[in-house]
Image (tube, rainbow, N blue to C red; front, top):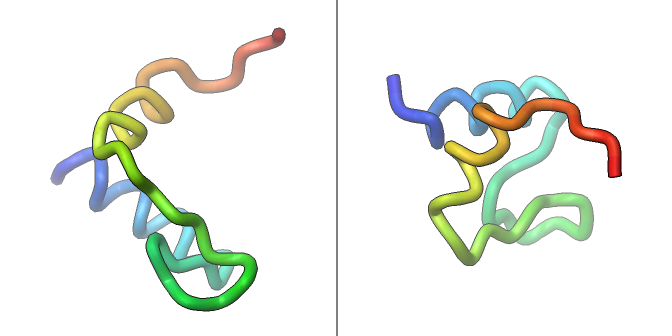
Length: 45
């Protein structure tokens, strides 16, 4: 399963669609986002 598919599955449970048309949907412009989100996890800034 690809990183993108995993992130899409998680977000869909919250009613969020990647590149969807609703105000709360997330717009992704860089496909590297998916692997970064899954590999880095929670980070404190």
